[in-house]
Image (tube, rainbow, N blue to C red; front, side, top):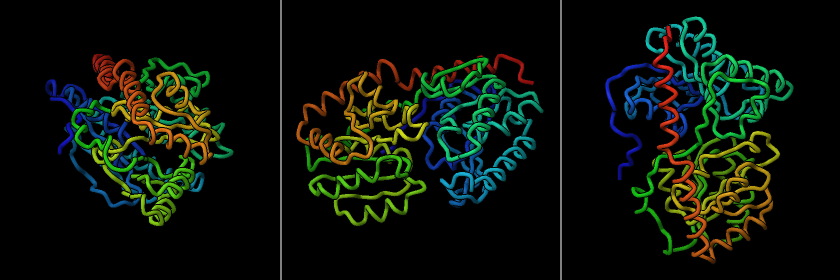
Length: 389
C-alpha cells in the first residue's frame, strides 16, 4: 500500500526555500511535512540535512523537494561532548548557504543549531529567515552551564527572524522577552491518513497491542513500558525508532518474546505500526524542562488514528489529553500505574473506542493538518510577496 502525503502542485515554482535540519530526515515528520507542503504548493524546496554517519544518500528527491545531506560524523545524546561535531556541522551548513545563495529566497531554519548559520547567511545575502522551533534548545538538550547563553541566543534569533514558528501556544513562554515580527503556531499534526490506514487496524482481533514509535531515550518512559510488558506476556508491543538508548532498548526487547523491535523505520511504516495498535504511549519525563512544553507527534498521530494514548502527568501532553478526553494520564516512571492504565484499556474495548473517537474529534476540530498547512502556506505567500533581495 502506498501512502500519499501531499497534494498536487498548485502551480509553477514561484519562490525558493531551503529547509535546514540537524538530522538525516530518516524520518523527520515535522520537517518532511513542511517541505512537502511547500513543494506541493509550487514553492521550490531544498532540504539540507545532517548525516552524522548513517551513510544515507548524499542527494535524493522526495515528494517534489530535493534533499542534500552533509556528512559530518557525530554521535547523538552526548550533550556538550557533541560541541565539536555541532560546530563542524554549522560551519558546513554556512558554507553551503554561502555557495548556494542564488538558489533560495528564504531560509527555513529548524531549531537553533541551524538558525545561527541561517541568520548569518540571511543578513549577509538579504534573505528571509523563518525560525521553526521544534524544541527549545536550552530546555531540550544537555547544555549544562551554557543554558543561559543558549536561551539568550534563541531569543536573539527569534527577535531578528522574519517569522517564528512554534509547535504550541505554550512554547511562547520559552522565548522569554523576545517579540518576533511574526509568530505562527503549527501543531505537530500528521496528514489525515486514517482512511488509508484503516486496513491495518487490529481492533477486536488477537491480543491487546501497544505501540511506541519515536526517540529511543530512557526519558520517554521506555524502562517502565518494557517492565510492564515483561509482566504481561499476553500483550504485544511494537517498538521502533532510534536514539541514544537504541542499543539498550534493542537488547531489552530481544529478551521479551512479546516485544517486537523494528529499529529505525520510515514514516509510513511508523504510521502503519501505530494503526495496528489498540493503544499508543507517549510518556515523557516531566523532569526534563522541554517535556513540560511538549506537544508530541505521537499525541496528534493518536488523535488522527482514533487511538487512545497514555501520557505522563506533569507534561503539557497531559493537559491536552485531559482537555479532549482522548487518553489516560499516569505518573511518570510508575510502572504499576502504567500497567493499570493499559490493563483498563485492554479490558474495555468500548472505553478504547470512546477515547479514540474523542481524539479524532479534537483532530478534526482543532489540529487537522489541512489547517496547519494553510498557516504555513499563508506565511510563505506573505514572505514571497515581499522583496527578499
